[in-house]
Amino acid sequence: MVPAVHTYSQNSIVTLSLRYLLHHSRINKYTRKWLKVPPGLSGVAMYCLKAKLKLPMKSILEDYKSGKARLLTMLEESDDPVVKTVQPSLKTGRKWKVTEAVDEAKECLKMKEVIGQTQTDRRGLGSTTAKWWSKTEGKGKKGTRS
Image (cartoon, rainbow, N blue to C red; front, side, top):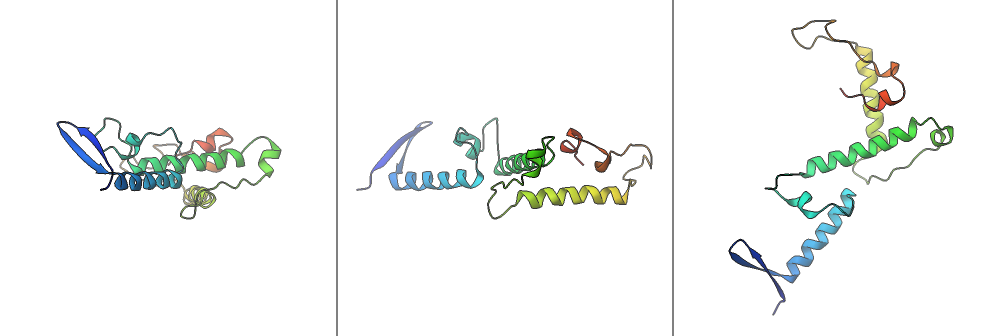
């Protein structure tokens, strides 16, 4: 006989095998390692579909990537010469490299600057002011969004 765990769910008793629970905890452990989420993040944030605060995998991954990119940019654009000269190696895994993503974003901003300001709607040219990435300094480069 396989050991089982009884859980109480809204008016019914659900019997889950211990093998299923161990398999689920193993998958949960590897998923958390792969996403590099903090250990304090609850399982509700990762797997719940009907809670008021939903965090789908897409937003967790996006938050992870933006945090790594922000850290790399902060280290590269530091005022301290020692920190600036050290090339940081941030561990991100094999599917996504933070240095490639940041370099690609910088190249995209430079290309937008080369192309110049274009008309995108009915307001016409000159109705909005362009903030060029090469002319901003310090914290302005970290907060640039397009």
